[in-house]
Length: 329
Picture 1 (cartoon, helix red, strand yellow):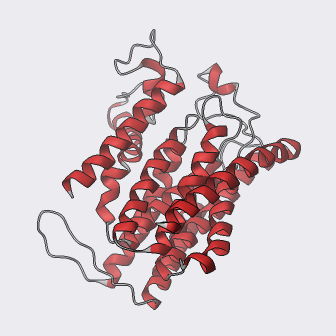
Picture 2 (cartoon, helix red, strand yellow):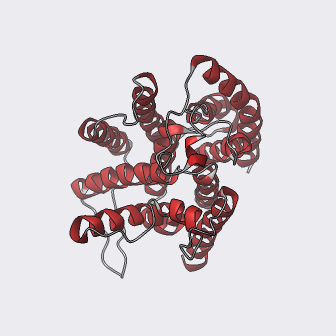
């Protein structure tokens, strides 16, 4: 319990101190958002161009440095915690390169698809290697009463899919001020509780630091945001959640705890498939949180929602999904 309390307090206080200074430094260095994805269709989003981005570097640094400093005093060292941190760090680097290409080359697209995917897969494989060397049990429970899978090869493929998939799912959700941050706070708090149940104090400390740091970051990231997390933050958050589910052997839990990320990703897949097959769009715009922003739940563009309303809805869905997971499982 000490890991939980100290971790959250350190993460929160550090973020409240670091993030404003990081924002000012990014402004001075012109580390700014160029054009929001929906900006050419939405003047409100176009107006966000120039807002400092890559803020994820701040809360990720807080989590990693906080873990290094606090672990000797709180007995939080274990391999599973290190692997979660490694996933967060490696995917932060991928996101950081992606952000840097956009910002300093003045273009809307970052990494090309194949190089980015290759690095994400390499990062996932590295995590698997460390887990294997530590004696981690490569066993994947299956739904519907099916027998568990004990194949190292199968589990390696699963880890790759999980890390790449969830990192990009959170990245897709990071489209409105505070949306991904608030959803991630709830999700990391859920895995904090699961780690506490399993007496995994290392993962408790990592997640407590993350929840505290994200709460502090949300103070500056909520609408109207003074800083964005960028791909640096969103890819890292998704990878950290996926690795949490893996090391705690609660792999399928993310389908409920991360239900908002699932909904946003599925909306994009459905939209692209529909347009490719029929030439027609199902939603006003995807990811679906932008559809809700433009037309509420009815799709009536004459009655758009503000970002606070959309955030509240999606944070609420995340909370309901998380509570359902704990009630059912």
